Amino acid sequence: HNAATIDGMVPEGTPGFKGGINEEIEVTLDAEGFYGIKCSPHFAMGMVMVIRVGDAKVDTGFAAAKVPARARKRFDEILARNGFGK
Image 1: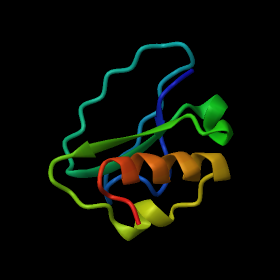
Image 2: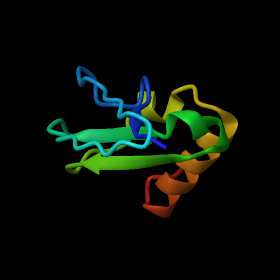
Image 3: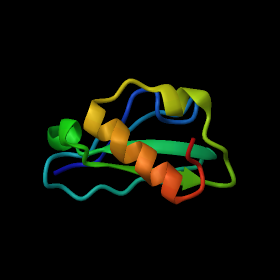
Image 4: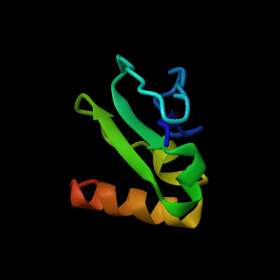
């Protein structure tokens, strides 16, 4: 497994990150917003997470980013469970 940001699912102007397979990664997220994170080898199986920094609201780019169907389902579930659903 690894942790990596998903294109289109980070605050605008924020660089992404990608950890190595089976390597620990430490990242400081300074920009307020939502960050979509994936396990690169298991992205299509829906192995994703969301990090919210600050009091941001979900922007349309985050919600509309093109991701595999299982990942989209998981993102929708995570957001809904935390009061940001449709």
